[in-house]
Image 1 (tube, rainbow over the protein chains, first blue to last red):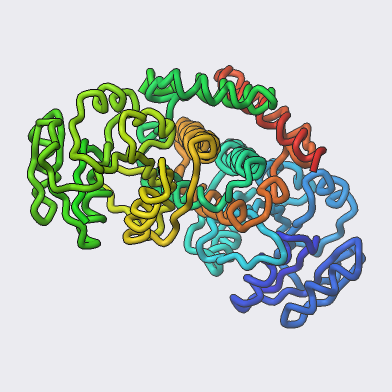
Image 2: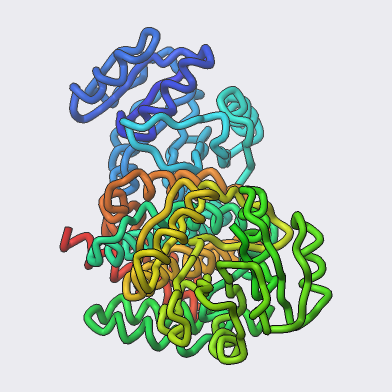
Length: 258
Length: 258
């Protein structure tokens, strides 16, 4: 199938190459910065780099918008597509209706974090698909299944909730690991010492049960002596202290309600 | 080397078997509940289960106390060991001085979470060793190296900090995953959808750099629209809302200071 990418950032970088490898033909790669478009186009079978948003003569059928959320609306208002084209965005948070100017519209959201320099194993990335009509849905699901083993139909409201869950499970988790990193660093201890324990924690939490049922640590066993000694240590960092208190309180609350 | 275990819980269960497999001979397994001691002793080459704390006739040289923290002090006060015996505890939080009644004392702390039903690959578990004198230290380091590839000398103050870091990196992380689980569950979404994203987050955070440098999400890019829509969704759960606000604020603060 002929497709085009509008945007050449991290998501476009991985998605365009995955679809290209699956025998789809990327016709155009648009970027505001031509150099970015060229870089990605060079990785593809026969794509042309462009700085124009007029695709009315393009042979592509599906157009992927993969740019930062706040740029999507402006970009859509300037876009010229061939008749019957399908326009999709790849955002976890934007509703499908941001593309309302186009009849055949959809969402093609890979639930993964991408950076250009790091390979991602796309077949294991879950794709969340939404479409404005059954024909469009069929095309998008089929495209997603060409590159991934897990494709879900997820509407805009569900996608928003999934994204919120990911903020807790990934963004906030990364911040806790950053705090642990800082705590070990300031005592000249190796953060890597914690790696087996962190990995085992994640394995247990992802084993299928509610992670609350495998909660461990001083809060869940109400070990007030240990908690007080931790808080004493944290007096120099009021923010970390506050996080410690709030998380411990909430762990105890959830444990009581189990 | 002849050794004995006081306690037959999760830590004793894995540690006794690992040392037994490394050709050390467990002489006695003590538990208040004889049945627990028998269960573990049955797994070992020639260990005897006992309910007595009088080990004055034991052939063992190193005695491992592996019981809950709050039981250690009482147990130590009742313990009779042979002269020159080495007494160690396996706790992440107790200071070595809780064993002050014995001249040759130490800490033998495996930095991992154990449950009896789940196999743990001991060679990858970091062991934190502390000892009251160089001869004892040598014995304990050698024992730890017989079962693990990563053995560190960690004093009581450092061990306490390591434990605090582990509370952030593991206990609190598990709680965030429990919140994400609950959020997906209440919308009939599969928590497993988040698994690739969670694993990639952990891989990036453990890649060696400060995890703060790879922080992603609405807070770090100051995407106030997304954050507000998340907070609106969380109005029914004031605790989750408070965690969302506090973590987001702190992510922004740390990001400004990088």
